[in-house]
Amino acid sequence: MSNKNIFITGNTDLLILSILKKEDAYAYDIVKQISALSGGMLNLSNNTVYTAIYKLENNGYVSEYSRQAGRKRTRVYYHLEEKGTVYLDELFENYLNTMRGTNLVLRRLYQTGEDIENEYDL
Image (cartoon, rainbow, N blue to C red):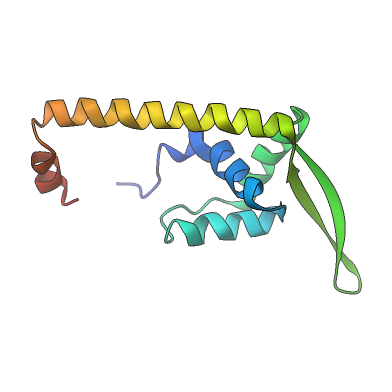
């Protein structure tokens, strides 16, 4: 079975915007932070992050600016805009409702939390 997390696709924006809420960051740094903060469980590709960032930028949720990194290289940093903060709040609420609903369904199907924890070694 694939080691991919099927829920990550719908949560990429949530993860990126959450990182940008803490501080401005460049795309590769966002990839590294997601991996590190998830204990290596979530490993997004650079392409996935860039695609999401371009969409977020086109919708006015994030903006970009360049900063010198070394003598010859510049990095593009992304900044969370006020409109992006509102969108992040919506995404986070949607995420919480989805997780609560999923948890309720699974607990009711398995009767107790112990049943599901035993069956799936949680």
